Image (cartoon, rainbow, N blue to C red; front, side):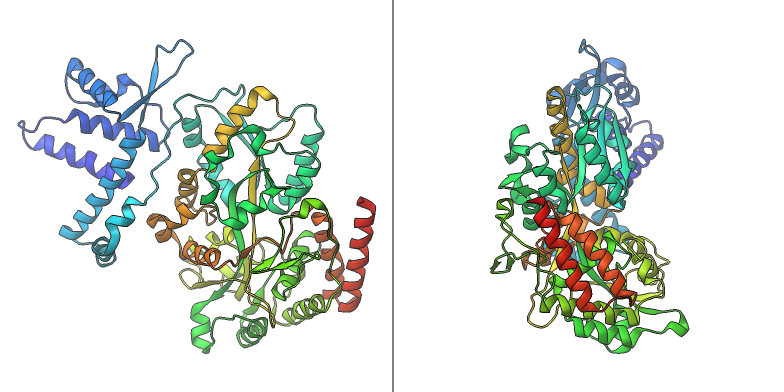
Length: 560
């Protein structure tokens, strides 16, 4: 839309300069200025619109009033007196311009050619007009600025998606009509800060982000306010969220957060290297080992596979997800069609199940992966496993979708446009699973009541389809909503969205591999310590399983 706006501004100026008979079009000029200001997060006033109209003041003022009356422009009070306004494009104007931008682009490519002419022509004639109707419009400003003295204060994780949100701070401040103050921490420090904040008499934050597995613990400890106490949950359109991500935000049947990013851990593989070696995409753990062995070439600086193996939290996640690949949850969850039942976790009727036959197969699989991993694998965590993949130093990697920008947006990466996305390859008898990760955003339980309404409205904006599409357009590769995944512009941004959407419809997106119970962080830490000793060769697999099981059982007995 920005490219089309720039083109129309230049084209209009050329027409007006070509002949004195071509009079300025005040509607067009004011629309262009208004839209440009909206996308650049600049304040637009009635005076500035009249100034760019190109017609006398009285004429411009009449045309401006006509645009307001036609519902194309919204006015938002800038002062308490309500005598001065900022001007903003309405939802109607944004939708009209979004459709017009697509039509102008297609017309220009049809008449003048372009590198995407063939593809776009096919889209247009075989359903492009239908797809355009499904496009999500840009964010529109709130009719009234949020009343939150000192601004909206947000605590988030320091990952690429939330950093995109921070980069767009000016746009979001314009939308909500208030300042935004965002603090970002690593995953462990984020949890510590959220828990410290809960001990304060009054919350320092209006909104906090939390990792999905923390939901049960934060709910039990009353760190978060149940959303149904703060708002009408139906306003969020719950059916639009990926089922696994929305269900994972619940505890005891109540929602405690809104999915801000649903990022399953997938299996990344280099399509070009697989094709050259004559290998099929791996659907099983045995096939992973076969491919890793075939593509492992340390002498040339290339290794078979990268994964989370750093001691503690990182490896602990890998252990739980690898157990899931062999059909074993870390708790004795009831088996149901498509996975395991997580609807009754709040009843606390569960027990750790680590020392099992499936657990042993998972441990042995991890030991075998060591043979085809980089030499620094035991210190690799979230980012360290994807960076060498992006650099072409490893052929395969387990990684969250949020890390895909490392190679999707870097055209110099050997993995750019050469990456295939799969759910986790599985062991014998197990069903394919893409363990759901990501973050939800919730409202602290100790937030003063006079700030709750503003926090709710800001939360609605940050997690809206319009905001999620904006994150994607600015580099994010996470998405919690079906509507966003179906947007044609989002699908063109990355094949990862279509792949994840298909996994969701096949019921492969699951959060039972890391059930959000209060004890889960300690279980992850325990597994991350004991299995690290196993990978270092200090203890055998049986001992790692037995010690993890005993420590987890002791944890449960203590907590109950």
